Image 1: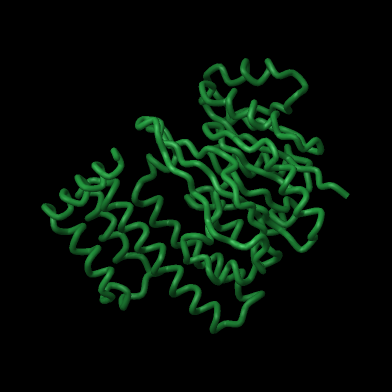
Image 2: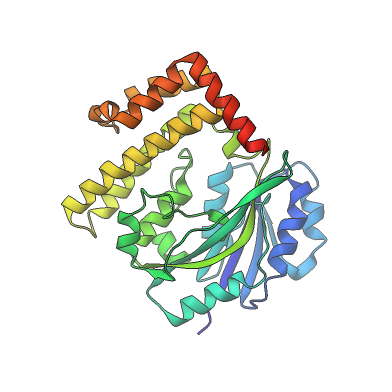
Length: 323
């Protein structure tokens, strides 16, 4: 039987982007779907935009503002009815009208699949340009293998192009801790331990980056809390994986997270923010001290701490982005 899929659009005070997002969901050729807008008590024209669609969408408005991840959770638990779900952020939009159809076909053909995901186009609104993000992955990967390789860049999930099994997400208590920045990554990697992962090698949505993007305004302390995700994933992995494989995964995943944070701070944040990041990394219990003696981390540490080098890297990065 063809799966029923809920396209969930969480929103808060972004009426200027919302119509493009809803329109892109409505253009999906797959018919066994519902489109849900979960309004987190917006104060702008969001309600008017949604009401203009009539019965084409299901509009829900929270009585009070819950925050982004709590709004995701409420929509997934209380509003959605589908066996599978897609969370499409209000400032993003789908560009492949057959994405949901293609994903549903894979699910229908292989009931071991818990997640179907795809590539995207990253668009920088202030630059009016972007790039394609597409990975060389097989059509279907055994979920446990996907999990064990998740320290590699290509084994990555993008929320706007990830359709997942809703009942399994509920069983895994999806989005339980709203203070964690990467709750979507936590959920999808946990789900990969319980089923296979399918990949559609196409760019299916636009991931828009702008000055008010959630990720652009993330604070150092919020990102440090992402290391708590590793403990959560490790605990779930104990139920499904051999302990030696799981320990190797934790070491590699921790290293990848740490390096990614340091590079992000070096390229995107001020010198003071970079120093604050290093201080917080030293305090967290999740990072083994031996990590800091590896050559690449010594290099990153030096680039962040040395102000002239730090400023040079930022200048080069900005020039590269302008090309």
